[in-house]
Image 1: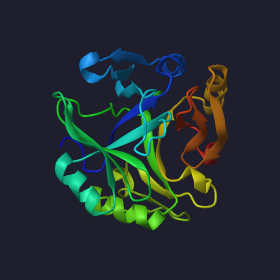
Image 2 (image 1 turned 60 degrees about the vertical axis):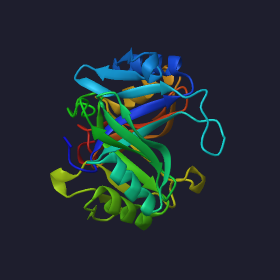
Image 3 (image 1 turned 90 degrees about the vertical axis):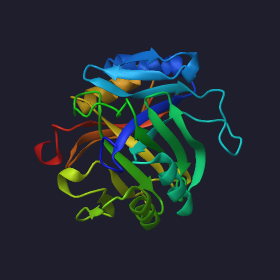
Length: 260
């Protein structure tokens, strides 16, 4: 295991219109997409100026376990020491397996589960591919967050399965997966300000150098601004969606609430 257990280490985009999604992110962040070929289902590796960002795949012909068509989304994978053992542990704590453990060539081994609050989360055991490049640069992931309708249940699950060490944020029903610099993700109680019908879900934050300009550019490229931009103690941020409907956060980490 190359990164601490439970660290968000990979993210991928499942798009119902991969062609338009690629054009959108190429224009917004300057990303490049490399098709891995038929052997890997034409999974695309995404790179930015600083290295790997994540992956992308076409889900237009795929269905959910209940038979409904899949929708576009960004999924988050947490680093584990043993995919098979941790997947089994997840089921023992109420999760349902969506993708059984399997190898991705020499890159690593993965699985995907639906946690007890119905949030999708991936498990990644690194091989040759450790995950995305941790740089903090523009166009790269800088934070990950579980928005949950069942806060304590989520905290208990990720503590048991991924060894989270919950550190409570003062003044909010929010914990990080470790204290101080050990934190790499958060769990947020979304009751009361995220519609209940949205359920629980992981989301990622991508850094921009000007949140307002980036939000405007999102709309120019056919995406939507769902909330914000607004200032926070951690940066000026907005909730946006790409043209195929995949939601993510953009954040200018240089402009915090006390510097606005």
